[in-house]
Length: 231
Image (tube, rainbow, N blue to C red):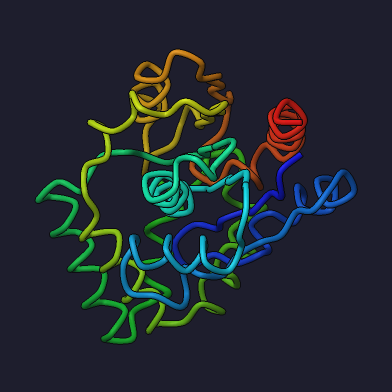
């Protein structure tokens, strides 16, 4: 199997894959990347990722990590042997989304992080999962800090629409989404899968945006089967 690189979402770290990484690492070379904390744009993040991990790769990204995976595939399609996209989108931000992110950046810089995190819970989690995961979510975002929240939001705001490129994906593709995801709704996952004939699509019930925490078992099982298929 090609080495597996797990790519966390915006303001997330290795804790996002706390349930998946140990199981995957027991099967082969699996690492969690932090390139999203070290470059200002998604293309630059992708270039650094490819430079730091030479040779064939399997890329599994959640949310912004999925966007990063797509950019890495775009830069080196011959090296990316498999893609797994969890709770992500190939679309660019709309003007309304850019306005909301800009307002969020202003709030973070004004010291209103807790207010924004609380308001975001309804979009990040299915209602049945928010209470048990809210503290872990808040702790992870606070570890990232204001500077990373601002920088990563700006990177996402500046991204291109990659939907025209999706039909060129020739490697095995796993697409997963939550049925109650308020940040990248299920139609985003369905749209990606519809453009790629060999795509495997899974929409998880009673699940929001944080798939790896809300439905850890099914996500681990799907990633394991997808990665093994690349052998």
